[in-house]
Length: 316
Image 1 (cartoon, rainbow, N blue to C red):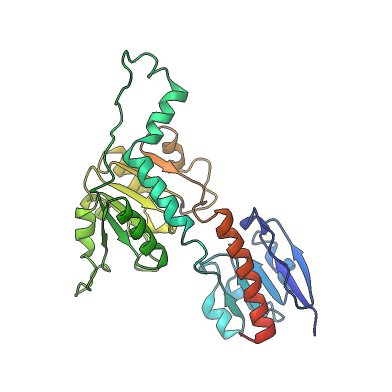
Image 2 (tube, rainbow, N blue to C red; image 1 turned 180 degrees about the vertical axis):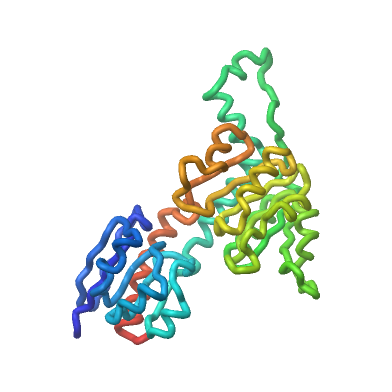
């Protein structure tokens, strides 16, 4: 069998686990990260590219005649020009379903943190003597509200959204799923788009990023939310207009937000939301780690190898 050249362009996209080497004859070259000026030189002799987030556009793909497969170490494929890949006969395989336990658990943790103001109370203890000087056994400077009985509005009813719903219902929350914006009919099991914003105590985003969902959360939709409501985004950063969200937080139009994703990752140091998180007790930001439980990453790397072997050995 021909020895295939595999190039892993951004190993730090899977920082905690090694990808098992496939069983077919191959060479393996990997780089911690690859920027746009380096991609062609590193990929020009590759039969298989392994990548998480490196951009692979039409112009570049057209210069890689040896390339047969792009194995993505994630679910999202928006870093690859899929139309160009198909036209050029390059297969693209991603990994789905590996994070349907860890992401919902992360969301549930964010719900508890927001509803019980855990960020604000913890920050108090490291920035002030508020508890020591309050004169009582406790103080209640930040709101604490029950999760049981709250309404969770979910955008996206796939595996992740459905598991978030199951966990939420297990702790006594009411769950409603949002219909598409502008839909002329409301499907069974769904609630009208604008009504979800109006009714929900918490909004959680699990829909794919498309032209119609980009900036789904914007000044207009934020204005529909209750001033006591919270936003959670563990989906894609560009589902949210970051400037509009910051304005809503600072103006008290919503009660708080928890984000695991941002429009640009890693963010610039002066990203306004990152700066605001240093001073706002109702803004929680985690560095795109909702997917990264040990079991989820183990499943992910094994599936990446399986995808390569199925393609090479079975033509799938």
